[in-house]
Amino acid sequence: MVVYRAPESRSPFLTSDEERQSFDFFLHQTRYRFPIDFTDPVLRAAHSDEGLARAIISFGALQQIYECGDDPSLLSPQGQFAMRQYGRALEKVRVWLGNGAKDLSLVCCLLFACFECIRGCRRAAVVHIKSGLDILLQCGEELAWDVVSRDTMISMFIRLDNQLVGLLGTSLSRTLKRDGERGSSILERVALGPNGEYVVQSLHGVLNSIFHDRLDMALIMEGHSPSVRPVDRRRTSRYLKEWHGGQDPDIMRIWYIIGKMYVAVPPDGSEDAWDQFRPGFETIVSLVESYLLRTRQLSQKRAFSFDLGIVSPLYIVGVRCRDMSIRRRAIWLLESCERREILWDSTLAAMAARRVMEFEGSRDIWPKSLGRRVRNVTAVLDDDNGVSIEFE
Image (cartoon, rainbow, N blue to C red):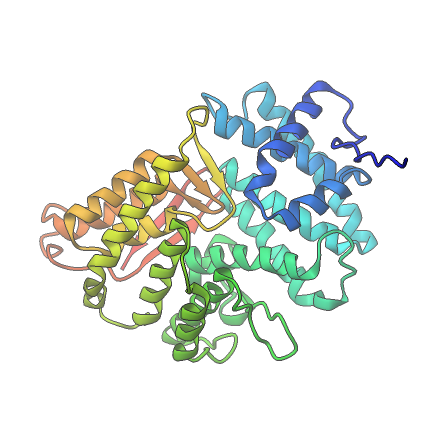
């Protein structure tokens, strides 16, 4: 009789109880925040690569502090431990890049970006995301793809790209402190095939097309050249409809509604166009309430997510919906849920949405502001757990 024994779950680079505990937190908790076709090969590779093991240890330690600790601060001993592990992982990445191991570097760019988001250094997170996108766009199929498959890695970075385009748009250069860069030198669409087609089998790919179309239109309005010719809006609508078909979980329903709104309202359209979506805004808020009630865990004080989430949709409702009852519900949910979804932070999103609501509804801010609508909200991220918000 032949008996097969499963490989050990832990990396051989774990030499202390602190390292083992942090690795185990990633193994049993963090891994489920990412697609299984990403985390499984990454965990396997961590058995033979110390840099990847250190990246996992640092992530596990920091997420445990953020989600379960009373004070999510890096001043604690566990926070300092997480930072030391992070520094050791960064050193390994520099060696990899020197040796041409760019597939490992891509994996760590993603993990590092999430690490920086959890600790509130969002500009550093944007730098990591932009570095990974640059590697992906420059190398493409030339990479060896020894750790995670090409399709999976591209899918992961499309999600990160959606965050940059959806949250920052044309202000990305200001967050990166590269004010001289504009247009396609900032964000290029991630092509997935020889004809420059995008993934339409997933909601992430459809949203990427929608977000980039809106970014390109904004660039044209600012007098800059877009990265590529915008995708036909009717074709994008068809992709969205084909993707949606059938019954979907609440989160997917929320984003399907958001996608339809973005397709229907061009960036240069009137703010009055959003008024037609009052029923959609109310549905989004109700779905979020149901989702939070169903997923809230007693042991969890805060939550971090890599996937499509609820912060951005609630922020859109808070900024675009002029029904005060729905708007206040959305902002209250943002203020109470304590979530970070990569770059999106519920607390900061709530502050921005409440400020927009106050500006549009108060004569005390500016006598002529009552009844006026905020057209654009521009975000510039920093590394001090904050953000600069500008209204137009």
